[in-house]
Image 1: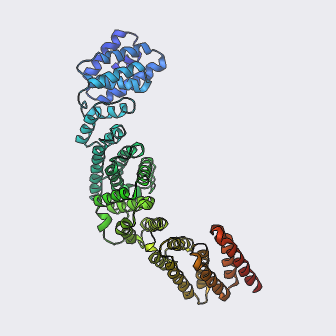
Image 2: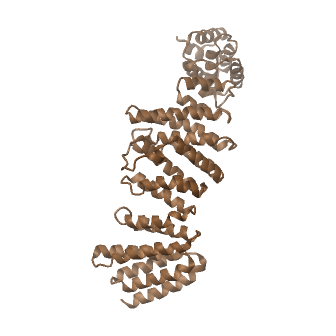
Image 3: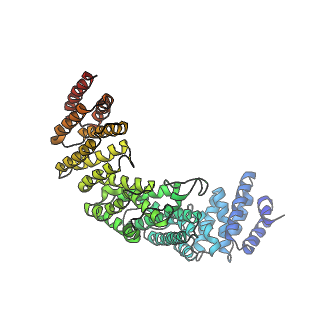
Length: 488
């Protein structure tokens, strides 16, 4: 009968105590002892023989030389049963333990950390750093003090850079990246629960750790990384990203600017990656994709200086990318910038989206993007620039004046986009847009196009218009519908 079976079934206190001391003395793998304690605890709990379990725990508490082994065994018992006596013994053994207890003890510390305060946690972290065990660092990260979390964040970031470099050499695995993501998620808990003092550097390190491993989320298929795949990433990835965004949105514009500058300093590819077409799977291009997605959510916290100097040059690089993910992220980032009131790029962006239609974007995306540019200008210090955007759209409509099915479809879609702007343009430009729509609808040879434009305004635009302009728009739509119906 093996020793574990004796501990789980014996009815003799002396036998249990002797076997416990013998196992603790002879076993060098601390996690094996922990698992043994857990299985013994569960078995004794099921059989109701808790008195014998107390003998195991008492023998661990009497151990003088092999403290790490005794703690591992007693810790397994406590985690399995939540026994109060086992808890007190574990607390006492932790206080008596000097150092981390060796590499095999690291996983035991990870199991005990959620339940027991570890006075020696910094020594354990140092041992994990020496062993380059990023999984242990991530598990222990939520339990270190705010004053020490930057040290853990730096170690996790170093591991992520190592994974990124090995990925570019073809030697990193998806599991390597996943371990870093889990560790970063552990560090990120401080960003949710912390006092926001001195954690800006931690934010930058966690951000760059996730960015450096984002290639694994972009490139995986459903059978490669624990079932959680795609740009949304694993549950740990999503939890870490939520913490990053939440922390950034709580900061002042000056601190948010400093944090963004810090990540641009950590990842030079944000500034200097060549403007070539993106090759999916390249590590640094995955990092760029991560940062565009992150900046989309915090653009509202940034000053115009940072947006113009750092954010927009990054988005412009990919605004016409042939790769779908990068293309979509660049446009989402620009829309976020416009929504935050940074209208300097509005006219340029209106010109870009008109050029991308219809080859790269459809009418719905054109409508969303063009309307965002108009709204940003309407609330800016230069609302008169809205006229330039409207003129660009009208010129594009006039280019589709030729006959033919394709031109008719394009003309109808562009007219709908123009009609949508009556809900967004500054009030002093409203009459000009209404007149332009009237003229183009009246000149439209296809009755179906005229009907669709009127229906679009009545069903969609009036719902999103401000209350002060709805009476005028309702009267205008009624007159336009009457003219359209009269030409049946």
